[in-house]
Image 1 (cartoon, one colour):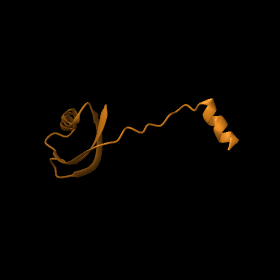
Image 2: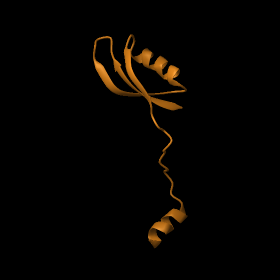
Image 3: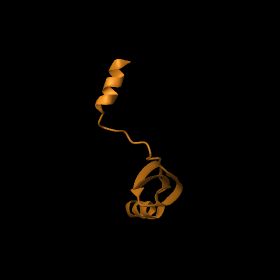
Length: 69
């Protein structure tokens, strides 16, 4: 699932700068956005880079290499 970073203006005129919504594609994310904020105006949409993920587990080799340094 991709993540999209939206800047929107609500129907009341309030501006929301960074609203991150996940979706299969941009159209799916916009559909979800319109369910939450009806009649909003999308000012900007950027794809978030989710290619870098942190790893929760550390291997024994990584620990030994840190100790040996």
